[in-house]
Length: 255
Image 1: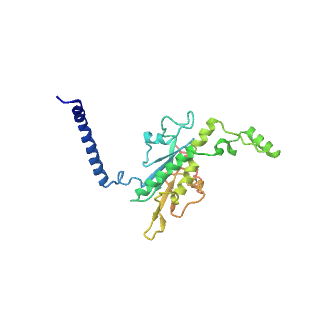
Image 2: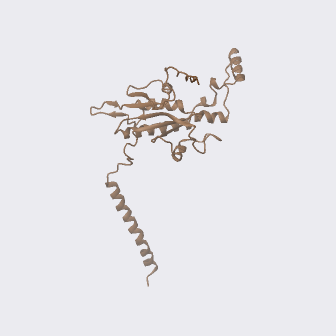
Image 3: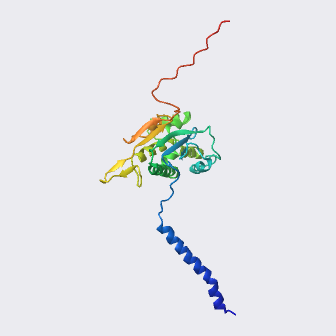
C-alpha cells in the first residue's frame, strides 16, 4: 500500500517528464536556422493595388486576382453598410502594380508591410478635417451660406454626418498614392528599399510602378529618382493622348 505522499509524488512524475521534454524541444528549435516565412518562388516581387470604383477603398495583394477571404480583412468597419459582405468583380479594378525586380522579394514584402501599416493608420487616426466637408461636397444651399458668412467676415464650415464621415474614411486612393511615393523614397524605419552599402552609404532599390491611369501618380507631390513609371498591359486611361477616332460608318452595298 502506498501512502498519500507516495501517491502524490508518483502522479507528479509525468509532469516532470513533460517539462523536461518541452525544454529539450525548445533548445532544438532555437539552435536551428530560423529564416521565417519564405513563401513560393518570386513571392513579393510584384504587388497589386486594387481600388473600388465608387468608394475608392484600397486593397493590397501579392496576387493578380483578389482573394475574398484575405481581402475583406483589409476593409475596416466605418459605420453601417460601409463594409461590403463580399467583393464584386465589377466594382474592383487594378489601380497599379509595383515591380521590384527578380530576386528582390524581401524588398517587395517590406513595401507591402509599410503600405498596410500606413493604410491602417489613416483609417484609425485622423484630425478634425474629417468632420467637415470639402468644397466639392457642398450643396447649393451650403455654398450660399458659406459665401454669406465670408461676406460678413465670418467662417462657416458645413459638417459631415455619420454616413459621410464613414465614406470619407473609406476613400483612401489619394492617401495610398502618397504613401507609396514616401515608401519608395526609403522613408520609415525598417524600410528595405533603402539598402546600406559596404561603405555605409544608403542606396535606393529600383522600383517600377505600372498604372492603370497615369494621371493617378499626380496625387503624390514628388517621386524619388529610383522610381520608374509605366502603364499596365490594359490601361484604363492615358493622359496626353489623342481621343480615339469614331468608328467608320459601314459602306452601302449595291445590289
